[in-house]
Image (spheres, rainbow, N blue to C red):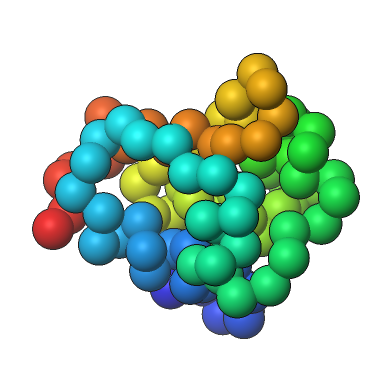
Length: 92
């Protein structure tokens, strides 16, 4: 993964880098299975998934963005929708 730091969400990055779908949904349970640990309670908040600013860097958002995806929690609060960022070149 790009960067000089360890990111505990690297398994999610690896999963997304291999993903071929442009738009799909994973449950929190599926994401926890991918990363190998429970998501924090704060993951239930919509902004947790895509709030990555210089003042508040978020490892999960960085892993998702670096893999070429955008993430949004679904309105029911139990799943996350991943969409490929169309501005990035396709990587397979």
